[in-house]
Image (cartoon, rainbow, N blue to C red; front, top):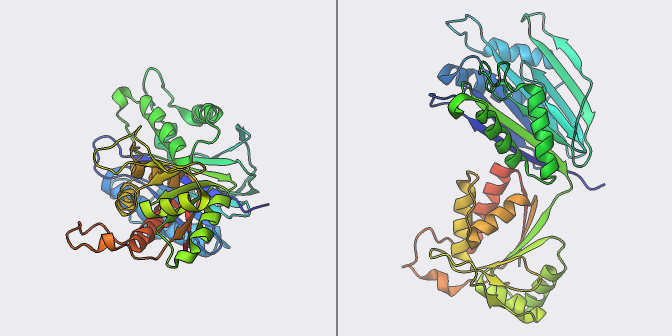
Length: 391
């Protein structure tokens, strides 16, 4: 079986009236073996103090989980001992959920104090047995430890109690939304859109939790994270003519036989594919944007755009991503990159004299630099795998 891709997403909102979040969510990916470690921590109280507690806990937990998990209790004791003491309640406390996921499907989850994570398999909530560990040094610090193997299509969702307790004390939700209510909502969301991304799912959960609060003003910090395990989705970006014109046909055949979504970025690049594959290239006038060069159409190609300017704008959208969608070629390219997991780039290295004009804007970077920038953003911020092949 092909290694699974882990689609990770999270959403977060501050407690009403606070300028900083008392929850912390941190994650990292090992680009050698593809393992993903994610930590959600909820600090005691709210505001700056809670943020310090949560951030310290999440940072330490991420480090311990990434390096070694041989002695979980000892690692937790180190974290608890390192936290500053709350001057009001005289305790140092932050909850955490640690998810350690490998591409072979092996999962380890450690919880302390947070609502239980939820695993959805074939659209239904799936219960996983666990082991309870307890520290003799810190009273009431019990940890649940889960070890299991996921299957393709499985989803793991976990959140802070700001989600499960949403609406608590209100006439409509006196006991809050509760974990059961969250699970039922997630099941309905998955049933409607079986391929919904992790980010879209967590946004839906968070928005629904806020609807439970009077006047949509959440009384606690809210954080929700999700992982989806599935075969990787692939796309190919061909941009820039190859250094040697004799390789035009080779590039065209690579594009033609690629299994996945295909994008051509650049007028010369599009003309090469059109010529070598004998396919018509036409400007698409159905969706004109005054700030962007128009897209074009070609049989067998999902998106054809202008080159450097569009790639630069795409990098800006990705770097400042907030869930918004832009109905222009750069927005469509960014959206395509986000819905795919492995992005193969066929990058031509022939210099385009048109971009050596010193009067062009400074941020209109050379193609190689902007592609590298996009790759860095996709790998760091969205845990994508980007393969760049120079031709």
